[in-house]
Length: 169
Ligand SMILES: C[S@@+](CC[C@H](N)C(=O)[O-])C[C@H]1O[C@@H](n2cnc3c(N)ncnc32)[C@H](O)[C@@H]1O
Image 1 (cartoon, protein in one colour):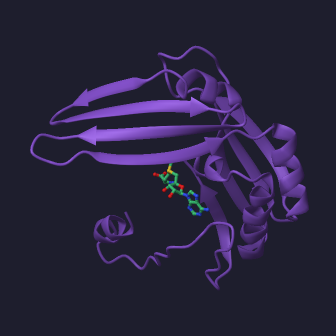
Image 2 (cartoon, protein in one colour; image 1 turned 30 degrees about the vertical axis):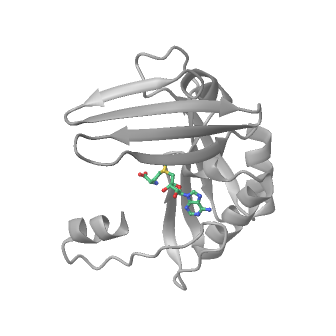
C-alpha cells in the first residue's frame, strides 16, 4: 500500500513510514494527525489506545489537532455478524465472522479466475466512549468533539461510526 501511495504521490514531498501506531516516531512535529477507516479498532488491548494516543500527543505541536474514527459496538453487531458475499468485476469476496463478545474475527477470501484464492484473517473490537475519553486524557490530549454517523444507507441506525476530534493543549 505504501508503494502504491508513493506512486500516487507523483514526486510530492511526502514522507512515507511503515510503523506500529503504538510506537511510531517520525522525529518531526506536526499540526495535525489523522487515523481513519477504523484503524484504531484493530488495537485489541485498551492500553494500546493510550499508547497510540501518547505517540500522537508526542508529535503534535501545541494546538495541534487529532482526528480519528472508530466503529461502534453497534457497527460490529450490524456489519460483523452475518456472512457476506460480494461479487464484482472478476472477483468474489467472502467474509465470515466469529465473535467472542469483546472481539470479532473476520475471515475473508478473495477468488479471481485463474488465480489462487487470497485469504486473510483480522480481529477488531469496539471501545466504550468512556474508555476513549480516559485514554485521551491519559495521553495528554484534550477531547473536543464526538460526532456519530452512518455511511451505509442500507444499514439502520445513526451511530455506526464515530468521528472524534481532540487537540494537544
Ligand atoms: C481498515 S484498515 C484502514 C487502512 C487505511 N487507514 C485506510 O484508510 O485505507 C486498518 C489498518 O490498520 C492497520 N493496523 C492495525 N494495527 C496496527 C498497528 N498496531 N499499527 C499500525 N497499523 C495498524 C492494518 O494493517 C490496516 O492497514
